[in-house]
Length: 423
Image (cartoon, rainbow, N blue to C red; front, side, top):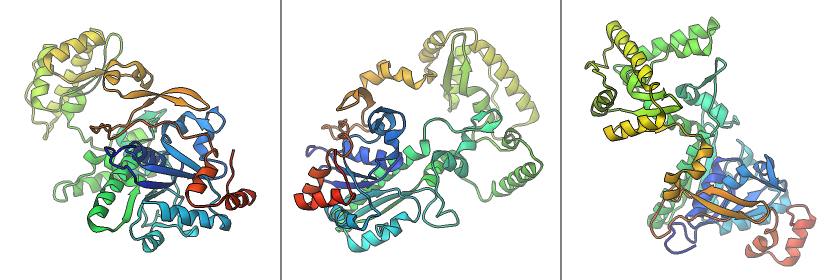
């Protein structure tokens, strides 16, 4: 840690497991924060999902770097002195307990802000803290379904909507929470007061579908109600999801989704092209030798539909006539944004990722060496720095409790009472 890091000397207690809060904690640690991750005596469940060493897995390592780990049985009354010491020590508390558990433990945000007015509490809930779904538990796939994001992404497997493998609502929530914590810390510098940062997985997912979640109350409302009524009727009649999906309007205008903003098969792979502006569309058409007519995309007639579908077939045939590398050269020379479709595994050796230091080598004390992503934000002066692995589970128990002010005898008693343990 150094003075050039934005969160230097910021002390964070993380009551988090799985994805969103742990990744937020890692982002803060990469910015210089001192993060203590409080885990159950059995450890974060992610530790056991595909272990590469005892209590270590790839997914745990991917979102828990740069932290200290303290096993603690929060529900045990004998843990209360440790909880109190952590809260007194902290500048920031992060939590993603299942609904109702923080209140049961008497560490919910509203209670904490009353007791510690300078404390910043960041919490992530599935659906928000109010409303009919406030007490429901959920994870990414459920939130994607509930928020409309899964349908918006349009991925269908065996006739059913399906999420992508990345848990995108979790990572969006983590980034949003980190932004909120940064904002609250900045505000505290001016006002001296802490605050509550409230992020839901549901709104994080909806933010990712932002293009489709703006409605003109004058122009769209009646049409949207008609579409929803039609889909409701289709559900009653047992229509498939694909049939229901066909009733939904696309956020992209017909020329974009048919020709100019999509993927194409080539002779040896797949490429994506992005021509959102008229100028880029002209360049793309010229590069392919097309004479595209000027159409008013906002008012598509049957004639226009037939035209664009015929043009789509023509372009697809042209794109299959050359390999991806040839097309990338042609489109790059024309100034058209394009890329082959890569698999994540290909990124480890990607020259562009290497040139921009997007990976680093992480030496893990028990699981070997890993190639891991560097912080997603670059800040001059090494403001964000790749972090080492969290030490093996329960090996820092005694040193952390000692730092919090507990004597050797008190620590021994906590271990005997099974409130915590050490390796």
